[in-house]
Image (cartoon, rainbow, N blue to C red):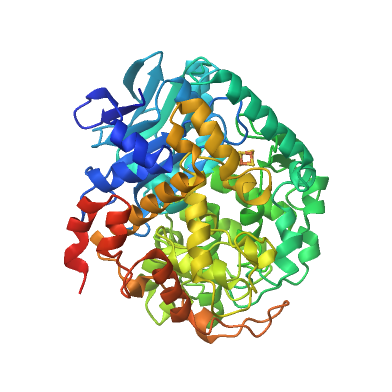
Length: 615
Ligand code: SF4
């Protein structure tokens, strides 16, 4: 029996439920379950920060086993940043512990009348007082809970920024975060500070012998994979050297340039030089986490379990700063406050450009001079955002709402899709990736459909990164591939970067673990992924999102990129790619799935919900 836990914080009622076989078959697990329950249980028009919104916290069917890179956890909900469906995944050990507790999904509903946390222990569930924890940062909170529940307990929590309703606050487990989309803000809006799990290791596999064989095959594949050793030794900062600068795809000065002067100071070798320790998620030999300590300069002694590539970009590209120490400090500040680094870098880059244009002045910034290349105002802004002070209170709303509040034409400089700030890859330099931002169901998000074909991956075919057409079907392929991996909450990094790890081995593992022969067909997983993606799209349609929301900021269509190998590029034919994409998906010209498409995916009831949106 696959089980979920339903926790109503308003009434205090907690109950276990079995996940119906029909849902388990059609949605497999992980993101599939999260999405299905979001669609079914969060009605159209629900206030993302009201008690009617729900948090779906899930892990995958293979979590807590010896399988590599398959123990992540995920939160699905309606985003307070975008108003769309959102999903955000985190690493560490929490996913394994949740599975050992016998749960694949926890549904949090309602709102507690005071700060609380949920404790899960040996099949018992308690809502406990968290008044003393409210206001504590994510490190202090977890330290306190570890002291109280023992070092064997695992947990996640929100920080003070979430309590202050910063719209892009995340949920943190150790140093790992479900960072994007404001899932932490939703959690804090329910007065829920943390979830703690005390559970002992357990495995319930349909065919343990076969499963063990597959794990060995996976381990061998990892060891032999070309990218394994460099990635394990250096982690994601390798992206700074390639493809960030090689292809001119590192966004600089709020997405005006594709190269950063002095980027060598941020090379992955600089981060390797200050790495103290390698850390990883439960059962993952890649250990992409790196504990670092700044060796010298103004930030000497600062430590963080990071930064990853995206965070390095977020605290260098937008502001033109090239100080390794400052990126470590910024990473640590965001972790303590509990905010998403990508959105934080995005709103700061927006503020710097407004300052340059004279739309913001020192009167608006409490005296801060937002000079490019100077990390100090950037660090002060992070603090202001987390505490919602002065300009930080406006930026805490995200660039879309901040631009509306500031006025004076600020919207032109707000780099977002559906309200979510863009990640650190330049859309004009990698157009399939850029259009994936535009077409994603969660707003701009690189994890939602990497376009590795633009840097040479032949599956399903290599793409010319600069081409303006003939890539919509690959955008769909990439999105469905990630959704398929996330049915088991596989980490998308090895899933996209190690040849040996993909749907072939994953499908076999699912059969050996769950005993469901149907999961052994890759086609079955592709179709389940497509079902999930369509359900996410229909959630957004129900909330009023239309084709006009499938757009990048105007800058990418009209302002030629400066610098790098893609100097001079613009996205010339976004509508051509969008039409190709809609055709590949079986959606009409307004981006609404046709009846035939929904029926093919077994979503007849969803068709009844959205029929009225078709013209
Ligand atoms: S690659 Fe990194 S994020 Fe992914 S599972 Fe391994 S340690 Fe975790």
